Length: 72
Image (cartoon, rainbow, N blue to C red; front, side, top):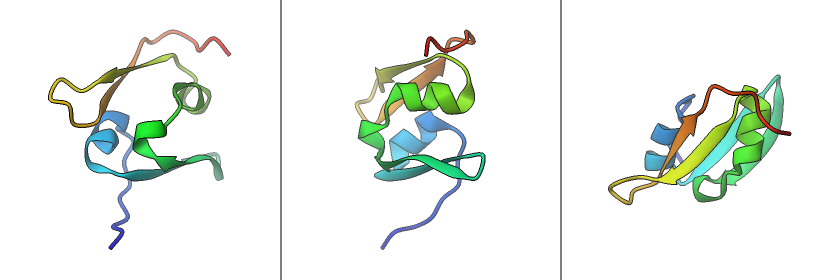
């Protein structure tokens, strides 16, 4: 049974969610499996550069922001 959950922490979502629906400005820029979440979509939505790395324990991923503007 799907359980809705609202989260703005992409690392936490990648650890516990199978699928995600990303919302920005009332629109849906992306939805699908967390394992396939494209970094460029995150960069457009949050207006900052992101890096995706495997989680140290192998469960999900770690999304880190560099604090720099995205290279779009």
